[in-house]
Image 1 (cartoon, helix red, strand yellow):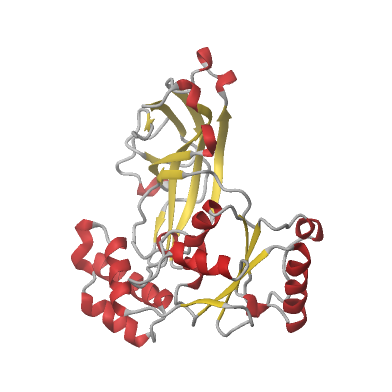
Image 2 (cartoon, chains in turn red, blue; image 1 turned 45 degrees about the vertical axis):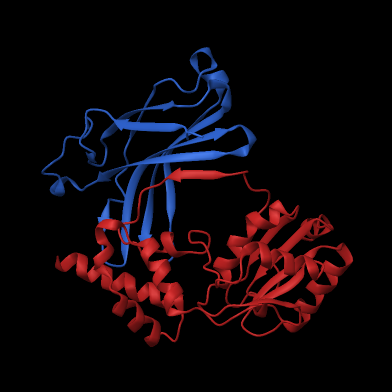
Length: 210
Length: 136
C-alpha cells in the first residue's frame, strides 16, 4: 500500500551501471509518455467525470503500471488520498486488512494494478466495498473490468525511442541505435518492458566488448 | 530555489575496502537553513542492480535530529565509522551487480526529502591490488 507521500523528494542516487536496469525502468522511475493530445491532468479529469471510478486497459508491457505511478501526484493535487495495491501473479484476494478498508472514504483513491488477478468473486466484492465506502477505484487490466475506460495504452516505437534517449547517459548515447530499438520493439510485439530487457542485454554485451 | 547540498567523504581511503576494514567517513550539509532540517539519516548499505528483482540491505544506520547535534545544527560536519562485513562483496556480473554505498538522507520541513549516495567497493583480499581502505 502507498500511503501519504512526502510533498516532494529528490535524490542524487548512483546512476545504474546499465541504464536499462530495473531500478531505472521500473514503474515510478520513468514518467509515462502520453500521446500528444493527452496528459496526466486530462486523465485525472476523465476519472473525476466518472466519480473517480475508471480503468486503464492495455497489453503486457504497455506502460499501465508506469502510468499509474505518474498519476499519484496529479491525484494528490486533486485532493485524492492515494492507496496503491499491486497484485502479482496468482494473488486472488486483495492484500488489504479489513481495518484499512474501513478507513477508506470519499477522498480515498484506491488504485489496483493488475485487477484480473482477483477471482471473479473477489473483484465483485471489491467493487461493493468501494461503493459502500464511497471511495474511488482505478484499476489496470488487460481486458475491461467493467469500469469506465479512461485510457487504453498503445506503445509506439517513437515514444519508446524517446524513453530510451532519456535513459541513456550522454556519453553512451550511441550505444543503442534507433534500429536496435525498432528491432526490439518489433520482436517483442510492442512490449516495452521486454524491449528494455532486450536493450539491457545489448548494452551489457557492447560495454564488455568495448 | 537552490537544493541543499549533501557531501559524504570516505577518510583515508580510495574507496576500496576489504571485509573487516573499518570505514571512516564524514558528511556535511550546506545551502539550507539549520531550522529547515528535521533529521538526517546515514546508512551504509548494499543493493543489487540488474534485470530482475532488486535487493537492498542496510549494514549500518544512524538517525540524528537537531537535539543530537551541536547547537542543534545538523548541517555541521559529522563523522562516523563502522566495521565492514565479510559479505556480500561488490560484484559486477551480466545480469546482477552488487554495489555498496554510503547514503545520507535529509528530511526537511513540509515532508521534503533528499539523499546522496557515495559508492565504494568491498573486495575480497585477493582482488585488492589498489586497496587503501581503513585499518583491519
